Length: 291
Image (cartoon, rainbow, N blue to C red; front, side, top):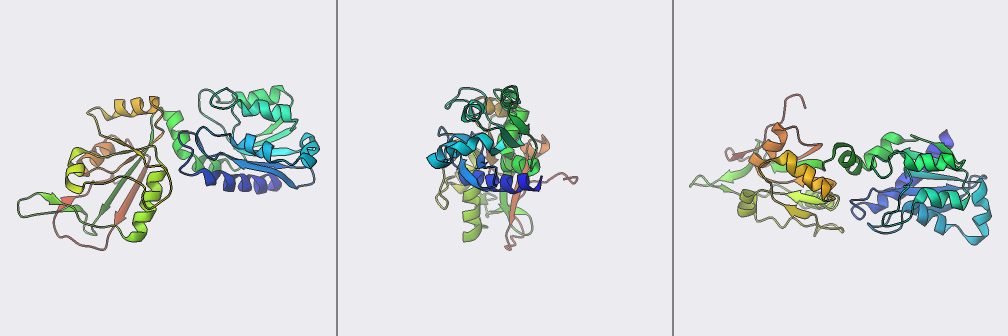
């Protein structure tokens, strides 16, 4: 078992290289290990629409090593697909390559896969071991897994505030004005987080007050699609999922953020607390005491 853990950790390292580039697909890594313990093939999903990790791993095997496939193990962080999408089924490729053993980290909840890949492999006589480092593999693709299990995007609430709990200042006319809370380092960190989601939501007030660019200019990656909230958030979330949005960052003002909190409609909360103290201003959202 410790050998399987060792190579699955390598597959996880490879999978993480697709961060910010593969969504709405999951990050997946694959490692092919010969019977003597030598890695003869590696691969990961580089970009959405591109070859899957298993394809990259099999294609990376040298001609001089291809005879070793019939006595090898392939380690994959996510269940190999079993359907024709943008690429052919990876389970079929594994079977045709003659690899006799597959070790899988996470099961795939996507309705087109959802155990079918494992079933296809076993029916072809391939030995399959499941749930190796499942917790780590699930954590890597928490956005993808949450979306397909709940039928809505994985939702992250994000805001910055003063140390005394205000998101913005208030001027003499009683109107809010923006305050710079982020540092150069935390700005880069947040742009990385943005690159990892499909869409970002802000309300009209935030757009008028802060004039945010909502891009990823400090981090390489795709800028998220901008979305404005509608009245029925639950319905909107399910519609976004149907459109292929698997992850959403909410960067709005306190009213919008509080509406998500009150509905329990979130999976992750990121709060940046500055050393600045305002004394008065626009109060930050209030989290449930039980959180």
